[in-house]
Length: 360
Ligand code: 5AD
Ligand code: FES
Image 1 (cartoon, rainbow, N blue to C red):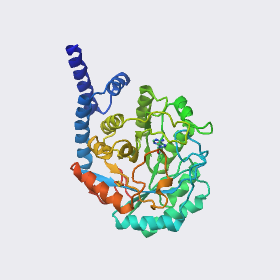
Image 2: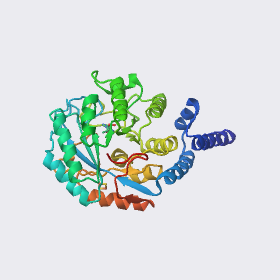
Image 3: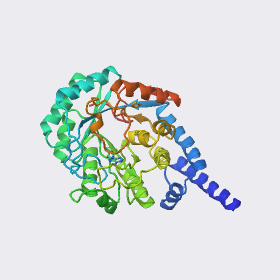
Image 4: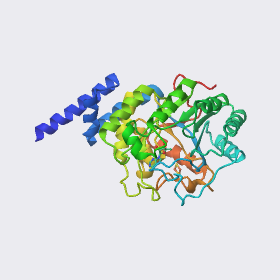
């Protein structure tokens, strides 16, 4: 028994060493490593991940100011609290002036990236989105604009890019088509999501993808497919976080994911994608009070404090128990800074582009 334990541990140690050295492992080995993870191997993985993180980024952690500018959504994703059919969700959207006001406050707090995130709210025309983007770029020329507004046509993505948008976040959520169809309404497909991501890359955006972990029906084979998908897309940013149920969705009784798996996967991603921008997400901070600090120690190098006006914060609830819904922008900003410093890292002021990219 003791013997087999030792063997298992040295097997895991060997896998981590190999992943560290080559940035990859055969399918079976990845499945073993992720499926059999143990506290000892997690610690070893995180040590290696920190080596890669520090080689590429030193001790810098990048700040992004998240502006949740609309919770209207045409979609009905089964996991999401702002899904169309949630009648209990009080809807809001911000005007251009309100968004610019958030950016002004954010700029004074050292933010040099603004992430405009929202549901798929078709009441903003492409021209309005472009107007918002170009006005932000004009007023804050040293800032990057990231859009996170879902699936659009290639033509729309091109227009936003031409208006000055630098980056786009669109998680693929799961790379298995059948699993995808169990999490989403029938109008949505992995095929179109993939099309969007490759269009965004071709246009020239810095692109972010990523998956929810331990969403309903997820298996280890789906996680393997996610990693292979990410290898084929080669995104600049990879956002992952645990699934957390929302009381007004069909998945309300499903168990939440664990911070333990999310942290382990951050470590794996750092070794497979050494130069990627990987956030320690709000969802991770929501299921684990020290989740974001632990995320940084597992290889994450981005945090996204909330810049949304406090009047709307508690309305952008994708899942239950979301943190920071009662805090002001400045509170989150300085709270994040002390969290980052508490684990020996420092806030980097600046756009924090993906390696190889500059502003356009
Ligand atoms: N639990 C965790 N993450 C969620 N997201 C949406 N709903 C949930 C949930 N219930 C994530 C999705 C989406 C991102 C903005 O938030 O991955 O891409
Ligand atoms: Fe919002 Fe800590 S990050 S209060």
